[in-house]
Amino acid sequence: DAGVTQSPTHLIKTRGQHVTLRCSPISGHKSVSWYQQVLGQGPQFIFQYYEKEERGRGNFPDRFSARQFPNYSSELNVNALLLGDSALYLCASSWTGNTEAFFGQGTRLTVV
Amino acid sequence: DAKTTQPPSMDCAEGRAANLPCNHSTISGNEYVYWYRQIHSQGPQYIIHGLKNNETNEMASLIITEDRKSSTLILPHATLRDTAVYYCIVRVINYGQNFVFGPGTRLSVLP
Image: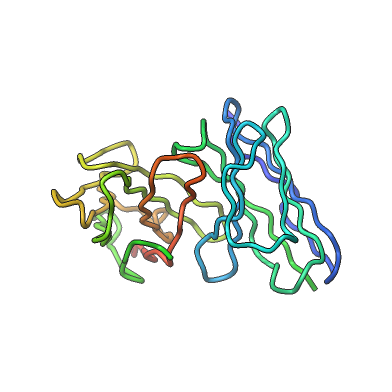
């Protein structure tokens, strides 16, 4: 069975640009969460979606937004990129929003 | 902030049991203990979770003290591939409740 799939695996963007990261959950999972992990730290929660509705939001600026589609895949959008947005962005899926989560391999974003 | 305290690093000899401690003295009655690990540059991998009873699966065992203020993750026969950062997390199982990761324990399995 396919695990959580994220795309792209790596990308480089310039300050001020916009980026869209994509996530496909494990088949049958209806909840997707997004995390940011900067070098040397643990992942930090950004958003959780369940059945296409936002169920949780971490302490991130409004430049960060997300959505979940009818097929339960998800996009994370970041506007007006800053150097400090350089990080590994992780997507996690779960059956519902309240069970163990399974993480993808992440998207490594570098902002220059 | 994470509600758990873990040693920053530990070593374990290959083939021996690795016992990773976690302190969660302020845990609430409805909070579960979860363990994840992260091998370099990969996404975190779910290991095990429990509420108050000891749990075992194909990867590890989780021992939770009777007062639930601490727990130990046991890898019974550590291999070099178990070298990773191990995260202990307490979490209410409820919608919108995310996983709060602390710095974790960096386990090095030595040949």
